[in-house]
Image (cartoon, rainbow, N blue to C red; front, side, top):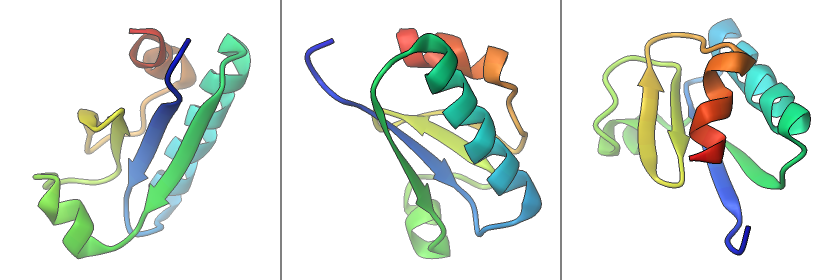
Length: 81
C-alpha cells in the first residue's frame, strides 16, 4: 500500500467512542496493516464533517459509519477498500 491509511474516530470521548477506537485498533492489528488512528473530540470539527451522531468512523476522509459502535469485523472492509 503506497499511501498511509488514516482512520479517525469522531466523538467527544464517551464510552462508546473509546470502544470504537479499540475496535478500530483491533481491526487494524488483525489485518496486519499500517494506519494512523486519530481521535477527534472537538465538537466544531465533528460538525464540520457533517456528522450529527457520534461515535463516527472516518477512513481517509470519508465518513463510513456514525451513531454506532462498529465491530472490528464491520470495520475491516472499510480498511481494505
